[in-house]
Image (cartoon, rainbow over all chains, first blue to last red; front, side):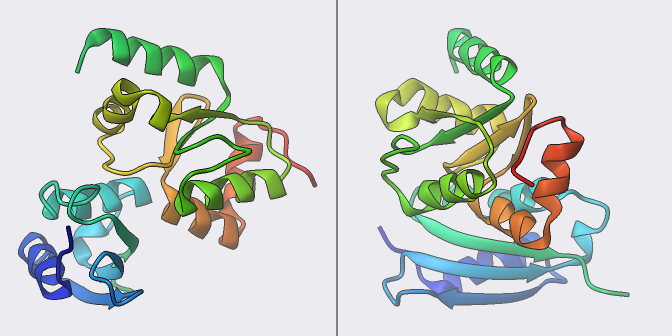
Length: 78
Length: 110
């Protein structure tokens, strides 16, 4: 049950059109990724809310096809 | 989700000031992400209770719905969801977790 990095990026981009996204395949196995997402949509949100928004954009894949996605989120610096 | 499961979760997070929903037990974690959070709490000398979701499929699914969070582990402090592995690690490294626990009246090793 693997998913490719391009698919993750596409889903996140669809949820956050302004986002700067970086995806790293940590083990090269298509199953363990790290994502950094920077979007103005995160402004004023708690970290839990920011991650929930990304999980929402991934439409249920997190915890299923996507076993491990280490997530780092932030709003852009002014 | 069955109301009974919601009630059990609510009861558990009310009764235990620091509660970690995890895979395995604090002594024998069954997943690297759960183990990482156990290690952080242990290093800080925080007393916590672990709930092994592998031993209880209803809680395993129930907690994801309850928190609107798709993965395990999940840390609750004084009934509030603090985060999963990434957030806890990030907060620990910045010193924010230490302040958070102190502000919520949880004893940590100085």
